[in-house]
Image (cartoon, rainbow, N blue to C red; front, side):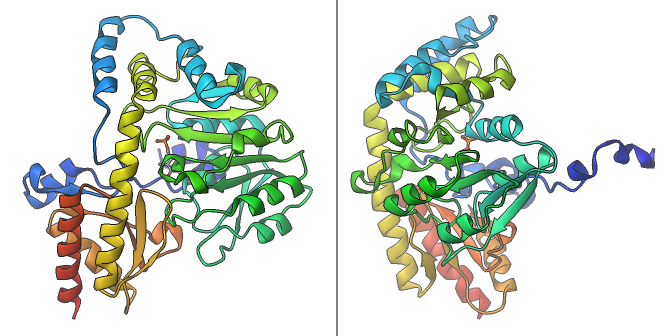
Length: 373
Ligand SMILES: *Cc1c(COP(=O)(O)O)cnc(C)c1O
């Protein structure tokens, strides 16, 4: 039986699986806490919950659940194409945008190829690259942000793909639009560039880039978006990629025919109509970001200025202090995310929550810091 492990290729055996934020139910079980007293600020979920329109659409979709969903996602693609001024045949729907990232790697990478991403970038990039037996190259970050010049330097004839998270999770950093376009212009068109825009809805208008507009000149570009964050649909799993129609066509060849389920399709369509909900999510995030960063300032805690719905902060002193603060917060019923996996062992990431949740987090953090002394 021991050798059964060896049936999988070495590159699969070497994978360290993605570590999600701790679920509320798990912490409740472990500490005997009541779930209602636990605040989860660990997975960048929407503290407002879900759009009531999307909830209603999901309940209605249950009536159709005996049937297969529309595998082409006709209606959702049409809505997205109208909203963004793109063609439906440029869209790849995914079971979350993670699915699109995975499909992209499987479409364009083979064993032995090379893909580039930044240090401290989203953990899913190395995973999808390694899953096809390709090699990931991590380029050191500059002040926690993507060092685009260094990433360009890292390109070799063996490079097939580059991943850019914009804004990035867990650092919250945003690339300057001019620098990003300049980067894209310099990357050879034989290399696929993925721009992951999971947090784009949290950017103020002045910081948004028209990345879809870059596709015409740069058919090697794939832009990914998600319904998991500002749209409050993390649990239904739906996201999408936008690309040149030929690129989308290639990726869609390996997509499972029904990778986005009926409930998720219905929810996403309704959520797109509820622009009011996304506006509320944006406004709440702006206020909450101010509340939390002000609180961190008052506690004299360093943080990385963030363009997302989360912020990563640093615990000073011994490295183990960070995990002690994390554990202490758990005991107080506050779940945040340790970032050891992201080569940021002194940082913790907190998602911007409701005003009351942010307050509880700050109060618990003050107590946890005090306990260190
Ligand atoms: C949360 C997140 C996503 C979204 O993943 P889904 O599969 O759509 O839920 C994608 N990229 C980054 C950088 C994220 O933080």
